[in-house]
Every structure is written in C-alpha cells, then in structure tokens.
Image (cartoon, rainbow, N blue to C red; front, side, top):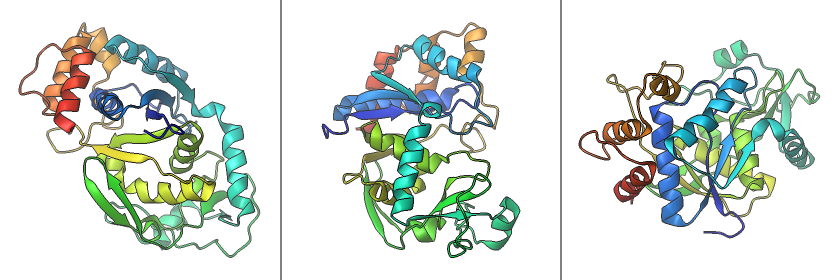
Length: 290
C-alpha cells in the first residue's frame, strides 16, 4: 500500500436503491481492502444531479449498515464543486481542455462508435475556440498514445484512449460533472490507491490514467475489476433493469444473512445458498478472488 493513497472505495450512485449487484461489489471492495491493506471509503457518487435523490442517499447508508458493513471515511460528490472547479482550471491553464457545443444528436450522428457502442468523439470543436460558458460542454484533449496497465485479477492491458473514446467530456452541456472526471478528481484528492469495480467499467481505465496524469498524479491507483452478477439472459443487474432492491428484500422480511448467502451463491462463491455474516462473506470472496 502506498502511504500517500491509503484508501480503496465503495462508490454507489444514488439514482436508485442498492441491489444484489452492489452487495457483490461491496464484498469485492472489502475483500481487496483486507488482502492488500487498504482502508475503505464510502463515496456517494451523486454527480448526476438530475437523477440523484436524497432518499436513495439515506438508503445507501442504512442498507449497508443493515448488511453489517462499516467504513473508515465517507464523502459525497455534491460537496466537491470547489475541487472540481480548481482541477478543471488546472487543465485549462495547461491547454488540455476545450469547450464543445455539439448536441447529443449531432454527436451520435457524426462520430464512430467502439465495440461497446460508445461514441469516439472526433474533436469537432477542438479548434473553434468556443468560450467556457454554462451552455457548453468541456472536453479533454485525450493523448493519442498506448497506455499499459495491469489488473490485479485480469492481467495486463494496453489501450489507446484516443482510439477508444476520443476526446471525452469532463462537464456536460447542462453543467453536470461527468463520471470520468469526478471519480479521477476524487481518487486523486481522497487518497484512493486501489480502485475496485465491475468488469463493465474496465475500459474506463486508460482514459482515467491519462486524466490523472494530466491533473498531476504521479502514481496511478491499482485496479481490480471483478465479475458481475447477471440475469438469466446474461445481462448485468442494474437499477434500469429493475433489479430487486435490498430495501425491497428487507421489507419482505428477508434477513441480511440470507441475502448475503444468496449473493455469494449467485456469484459462484459458494455452491448453494446458506446464511452468511458479512465477515464470513468477505472472507469467502477473498479466498475465491485471491
């Protein structure tokens, strides 16, 4: 563990209630924290203010405590505006960002997509000199270079973020900070040395490494991308797919131990469902992953 970055983080978005997929993610975070000697920060990632709700924020804390999780520190992204403005200005002073007035429709119609269906923005506005106003998005001048990184579970990767996503947005046209910018800024200034998240976010890694370097981070975090729980059709559990919430399971009378056992069984950590404490669940996940 790097003493300058002593934390890992569990970082749910309060755009719905937590579900079984979040439980698996939390177990992986805590298992990795134990394995590699990190403390755990709970980060409420409410950068998407159009969808975040206070009821969901309250439920995150309540549901995690009901399951038996504790954490060493806590933060919420809506309190970090000064941080984001300051770091954005750092990039601006280096000439590494530009304003963009491309509409969503124009962006989708005029840019190619990668294998995951993500837009590869081709820099239409880079040389227009548009002002940094509230009506314009802000984009990062993504370097055209290969980035090597090693996942603690999946091994070595080499990606060119310019080819993968082009010049990605740091702030959108309605003034909201993007996921890519907010998490890199927070990881940098909140001492995050280990990033644990689902495999679906693996391709964010190279762009986050180059952005962190641009902000002045000299040592990138370690990364670990864990398998996901999927439904019978092979799709990951998500709020948008109406995955059963922890809150709903609690209301039906299910115990925390029963739910933890179901998650471990569904993820293939154990062969069949049984009652498990959060401590035992973390140990089982640690034994399976490492």
